[in-house]
Length: 334
Image (spheres, rainbow, N blue to C red):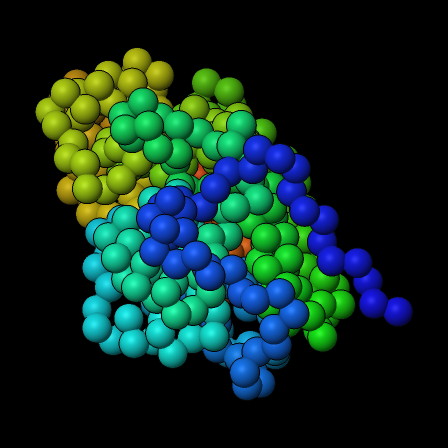
C-alpha cells in the first residue's frame, strides 16, 4: 500500500524568494503533476551545498544530484557562468535556497524556469518564523539552515516536491525524509545541550557577517556580525568600534572567522581590542554560507552544524566532545 504524500503546509507559508519574478517568467514552474522523470536516474541540480546535501539525502539513488556553488564560495556574490546555465538547463529538476541568498543568480534561475521545474526549499517555512532585519531592505534573512528545525522543514519541502515529481517512488522519498529528519532531531538536541554549557556571560558569537541570526535565536546565543546579512554590504569604522566595545566590556575571549568570507575585518577587531588592553583570539573558522570539502564529514549539512556548534562551545568556555557529536570532526581533535 502506498503511503500518503507529505501534508501540504498551512495557509500563509512564505513564498519562494524571488518568487514573483520566477512565477511571472515561468507559469509552469511546478513540475506537472504525475509526470515521471524522463530518464533514470534523473538529474537534480542545486545551487548551494546545503541544498545539494538535503536533496541527496532525500533522493537517494533515484537522482544524480550535483551542486553549483562549492566549498568556500560566497553565494551572495556568486554570478552564474555560461557553464552553470547549461548545467541548469540540462537538469530535470532544479532546487535553490531562495530568500534572495542567490541574488546574483536570479536571471539564470528565471531563464531556466521557463524550461525546467525550479523550486525553493524554503517554501514550507511559515513567514512568521522568518527573520526580517531592518537593514536588509524589507527582505527575509536567507540563512535558515542555521536553525536545524527550520532546515528540517526545508528537507520536508524537498521530499514533498520529489513525491510530486516522481510519484512511483513517493514511498522511498518519504522513508528517506523520515530517517534523515530523525538525524536532524538528534543534531538539534546536541546543539541545544552543548551551547547551553557556555557560561551565560560568554555566550556571545562575533563573526564576519550576520549569517548566524537564526542560530542565535534557536540556541540562545547573542550574535553580532561585522558586516550585514549580505556580504555585499561594507563594514565601516563605526561597525568595528561597536564590536570592539562589546568584546572589551563583556570580556569575550574569542571571535570567529568564516570559510567563505575574508578575515580582514575580524583581524581588525582583534587589533582594536588589543589596543584597549583586552586579548581576543580567533576561536576557529565557521561554516556560514558554504559547507566543508566534498567527501569530508564537514562537507555535509550535519557535519557543518556539528563543526560550528563544537567549535563555538570549545572556544567560548563550554563543554563539547573533542571531535563533535559523532566523533568525526577532522578539525576538532584533542
